[in-house]
Image (cartoon, rainbow, N blue to C red; front, top):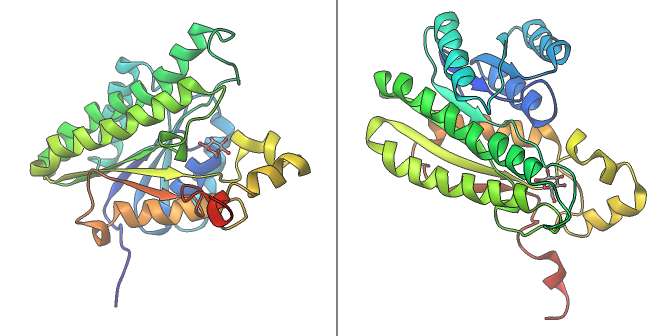
Length: 261
Ligand code: BGC
């Protein structure tokens, strides 16, 4: 019988107080992992995630840090190591898209902020996690990118650049760590219904427009990302490294090309 078993694994999920991160943390815990629920500002929300995991019989603890600060990240990973005795799974999920603005009308400080959370943050976390994983010759790093590591998106040049950068970071890091027993994989979600795109799915016209961009004609659910993260983190995915897996209901296969061309 095939079993997805993460018993004995210790996981850090960044940005786990809501959105995709919450579903990822809950799913890893349901598969048996002990989960560090990282948050920056949402203490109550993180506590609620830990609570729901505990009630379901899982193990989790909240941890606060600003992942765009390398010293804070080192401290975070040290705290997790002290609490859990090690770290086997890192899910770089925390991210932001920033306000929509064309280059020139935008604020360079916001561009830098998006890059520092979406690209430097995962780099700092991976950098702190690798020596801990290397010790056991066992580890998985999952970088949550986006279909926008492939698809340009007007008004979001910082976000698309950060996600494309994170994709190449994934491949390079996978190459560097394959002989250390560490796998590094990117997961590119499409349009998943979370607070990040609420303004789109809460408006019927915008939702219709978005659905048309998805071959399956609907938004994804956070659980549909959580399931894939659990698989990628498990030994069932033992031969997957250095690549991106899109979980997008067929957004990347140009649904518009069903007609014409
Ligand atoms: C963004 C969402 C968007 C989706 C598809 C994601 O990366 O965070 O806001 O709906 O891409 O465009």
